[in-house]
Length: 512
Image 1 (spheres, rainbow, N blue to C red):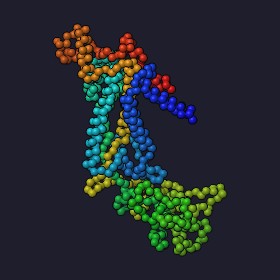
Image 2 (cartoon, helix red, strand yellow):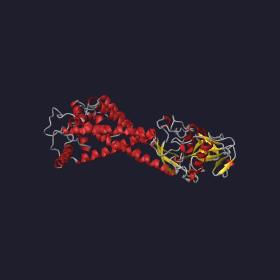
Image 3 (cartoon, one colour):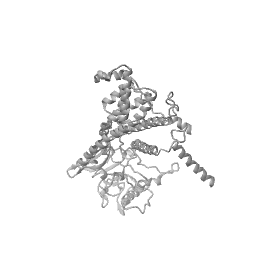
């Protein structure tokens, strides 16, 4: 036991020590930076949240959804029966501008208010947040890049001072990179891509959201009425001469369960059936008629033709009533389990011990719509999705375009990972080489102004005699920004990065 406790204690101490010297493995006298840990936690929570949303969106098209209504997200009625439910093609290009992922039952005013708030808070607020975070990381990398390679003053100005994500600023930044780039071409491409993403973010955020009418599924009956989809029910049998039996009628439909449809039933209960494991002599009330028909056809066969042991002219009994020949004409459709066809159990041979369902073809699945019999194709042809009204107003749902949301989440995740790698590389490289952060704000502006004046004087240019346009051209052509890095006393001026660049991959391999 003591040895176990000591090993656990040692493991915690090692983990704590690793956090203290993270990014500076060669020096162990740096104090523990609590602010760095907080930043790492915030960044980890953000990236895990975006990754979780991305995983959810990837799983959604696989069918992990609660809604099984034939009204699909694009407002179309799709129904394929029990084996081939009408699936919605989440990845279809035609759904790119459709609101296919929506929630709620809202009035028009509420849906519009949510959409406006989204555009303001997420669209504009998200753009400001992304710009703030991105330019903060870019400034830190710029300091690292200027140590090893000079850049134009316009590039330094755009990144360090202007911090603008307008189209013109992005164009100027890209043009500056083509003239005199930073130390890494990959980072330059990432900066331009980030600037374009931030520029387009409000438009993208607004485009991927919207509101759409809340639809319910109906089926047109032969009488012209719209029957709610949950009110239809699958039919097991039709007793053609049901008027020979009290309480039944001609062409009497026998449902899978119950004696009539229930309009309050949800679509998930559409295929509710009697349990084949039930005791045939002790079944639920809504399965008694089904049991009686199943026992009858077991003895006397289907469609009034008689069974294997039925003699011509023989009387039959159904629900305690004696019937004259011929037997009842019972037509069967798709039968879901042996509760409805267990008569075949008495007619199996030794080569096939398990009785086969004689009506197992799901294409014969039939439904009762009002008083008429519809097959699957009829339901699909007559099905329709209609908006729901609350009084005189149509109800709406607010949501997203699935494809646009997926693209946006992928872009955000890529942006987040790219910033994390760039920040970790720049921050920890500066830290391990004892280079302190460059001044910001007015102090940084004054330092850069002095540097520009020095370079103009060394080039023999009298800036007071030039117009703004001429001075801008001279600065663009002749001058590059070379701020002197702020080093510690132990640093070597001849070698600005004595400890080299920090690498996340190399650090990981070194530790493990």
